[in-house]
Image 1 (cartoon, one colour):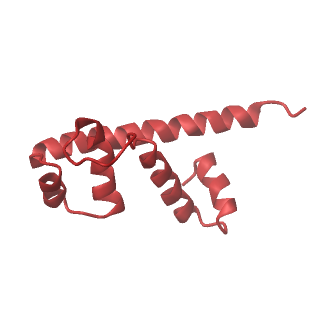
Image 2 (cartoon, rainbow, N blue to C red):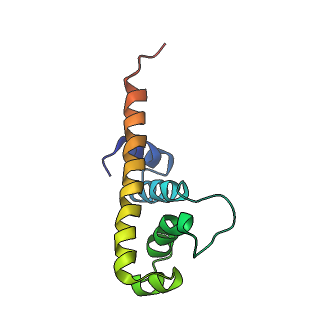
Length: 106
């Protein structure tokens, strides 16, 4: 909530940092979406599908695993990778925002 990118987005969203954070999370999940039609069996779609099913659609782990043809242990391992990937993307966006702020105005 204290990230600069959240604060900046909140200013554009009626000063609501919760909605701003949700929007940023959705944007960064969408950045993982491969090209083409969604495929529940394809390896390249796995991280995106896990994040979408678990956190956007609020599906339970068992249902998500079943829909993605994964065992639950595998789902949790891949889910951790997916979460770390989104976190890294958000941190990179934060670093870029901070670097942009530190540049002198002309």
